[in-house]
Length: 201
Image (cartoon, rainbow, N blue to C red):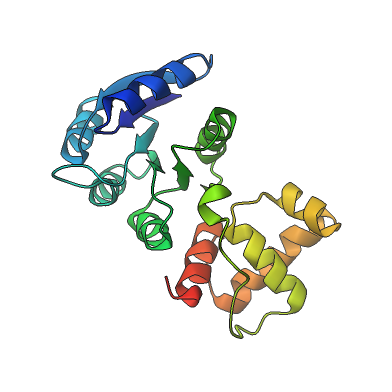
């Protein structure tokens, strides 16, 4: 997996390069310090996944994410930041990011998130969502559907949800399909966005 690191903090870039470079399947192909530099880099080099800081001088990471995803939708982007303001999460996912992790997350969590997003699973750091309560209001979902809706928004996999709720993975999968149909959404990322929109973020 070819990874581009985008952050204006040289110490963060160096530490991430060391952590990820120790993984045999992760190859750091570039390190840049701005959103505009990230756009130029992916236009000129083969990149599979971008770890993108949110706040940087000049062009911010959210704007850069939107441009990269519009030009090269195959590239996965994970926001890597110190900020866990849910408005940033919401805007990042709207821009096309597939994951959101904190710089303070354990390195094992960061690596796991990278692999999950590369495999096509949207992942939001548990710590980034630790203060997030259950969905408010009535979207026409049952109690069990609301529970699963909440866990999907927290980035849990079907297996993790099934273990939390003591139900089968098949039940989780079928319930998610029902929720998608009820809310007229396409996938898990849209479910997460809908959840946060309903929360007012």
